[in-house]
Structure formats: structure tokens, C-alpha cells
Length: 152
Image (cartoon, rainbow, N blue to C red; front, side):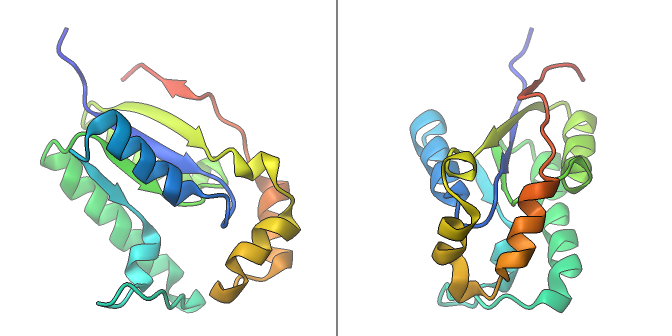
């Protein structure tokens, strides 16, 4: 049986260090051979500065989904989706694409999502303009999923 390419879907509240973990996984397990795709990239300027615009979040998510599909179409291995992915609905486009393209799908929740309080996480990302109340709502709505999805 041929090895299937991997799609890793990162999960966790803002400030839970998903991005650090995503790059750590990419470097240590995959020797930087794939792509880390984040909707946040849409809001970065050419100098890497982050400017989140709430009204453009839907466009940003569609943009990231298009990048993921292009990477899957090109057989990129691995692809790491570095978004909050609070609900199954948030992950659904990536999961459906991954299944269509034959990817092995793994869900990884950043440990600080559970280890830290919302107040602690919010303090890490307060400069991004995310309201603490929004983060409490996301924490309340966080849906658990099986950590491995092996069947296509």
C-alpha cells in the first residue's frame, strides 16, 4: 500500500500556540517538506505585519481553502492547516478536500488550548483586536473530534 500524503488540521483558540506547534511539526517530523497554510496569512503585509479585518474574514477563509486545494492538487505532503478550527463546520471544507485527494487526515489541538485560561490566551493576542467575549464563546463552542481519520 502506497503512503498517503498527510493533511494535519491544527485546532485551538488564538494564542494557544498553534502556529508554533504547526511549524515544529513541519520541521521535526517532515523536514520542512510541505506547506503550512493559515487564513491569518491573508491579513499579513509584505513585511509580515498582521492586520486583521473582521469584515474580510470570509474572503480570507475562502482564499486559504483555494490555496489548500491547489496544494492538494499538486500532491504537497504534508499540508498543515493552521486555523482555530473551533467547529466541525470550520474544518469541513479541508476534510472533504483531503478525502477527495486521498490524504490521511489528522487533527491536532494545541496543548495551550486546554492548559491556559481564556484570559491568559487573550492576553497573548489582545493586540490583534480579538474580543475576550468572542474567545469565551469560541471556547464554549469548541467541538471535539476523533484525532485520527484513516478511511477515505
